[in-house]
Image (cartoon, rainbow, N blue to C red; front, side, top):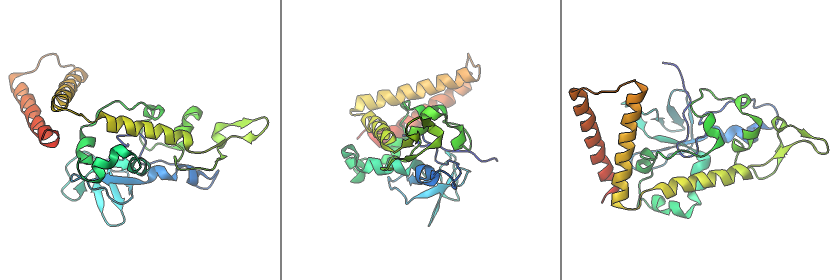
Length: 242
């Protein structure tokens, strides 16, 4: 099986990003994109690790599987960008996850709102490289914690000041908005929770059928679909509905 790139489900940023470390202070601007945390099923968040190119995150002490497939060798979880995690920690809305009133893993698992970000045009690309990013999208890949402006030749030059400079402020504000979208999405009432998940399941089944050119479903397959829906509804109810 070949390698692949995984993406943060909150920001849409790649969790593995290639660039030339030896020029233009790229290490300062883009290295952060390779720093990843894993959210485990109990809501625990791991130390920083890196994607191995095959859906696994390697930390100093353990390897975690984050490729949406069952893996009995490693503990599984959901990978998120470390920069997103750090920004969530300073968001007051995140307090319920910090004190374990709510489980971050379970909310990530059922988060399916479309991410409103320019980086989404690259989402799904394999082994994304800095050279693949258009000039206008560069600011959304810069380290959001970069406070001092430094030169970025990819942004071009001005007649007066020469090579354009950039800091992480624009991306920081952008990521804060995406984090708010994620935290605000969390259902607030039992009825909303049940309806949101039911609609998600039905839309997913419809898309699967359309993608495969299916217009009719056999009775046997319909039974399997119904069972899948019921099993997932039970899990969803256990997660959200008290």
